[in-house]
Amino acid sequence: MSNDTNLETRGPATSEPTGPERTRGGFCVQPPVDILESADELLLVADLPGVAANEVNINFEDGELTIHGPVRGTADQTKRFLLREYGVADYLRSFRVSEQIDASRIHAEHRDGVLMVHLPKVEALKPRRIQVAVG
Image 1 (cartoon, helix red, strand yellow):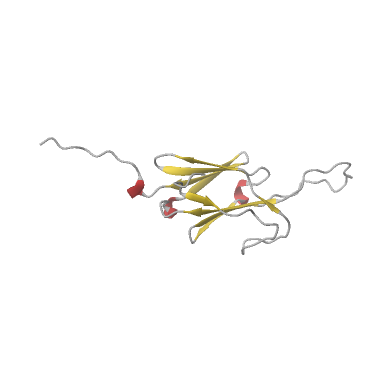
Image 2 (image 1 turned 90 degrees about the vertical axis):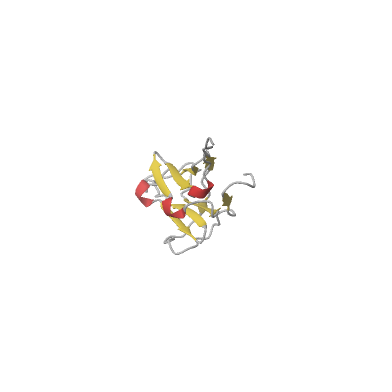
C-alpha cells in the first residue's frame, strides 16, 4: 500500500482473542482484503467465506476499523476424519483509518461471502471543478 492512502493495516491477527466482542477461544486468521480508491471513497473488499451476513461485526473506534467474522464449524460429529486440512477459525482484521474518511457515513454490505465496506471521503477532500467566471 502506498504512503498516500487513507488506511493503514494493523499487525497480524493474533491467535489470542482480544476485545470485548470475543466470546469464544480459538484461532483468528486475517481475511484477504483489497482496497480500492475512487474520487468519493475507499472501498474495502474482504473475503469472509463461511460467515453469515448477520454475524459480521464491524467496529470503528478511535480511528481504528475492526472487522470480525465468526465462522461456525460444519464438521459432522458422526463421522471420523481420514484427512483434515480445513480448520475453523474466525476472521479478524484491523485498519487505522485516517481523518480523511467521514466516519459517520461508513457503511457495509455482505454478499456471497464477500464483505464490502464503503469508507466515504470527507467532502473537503473530494476533487471538484472550479468554475471560472467570465469578467
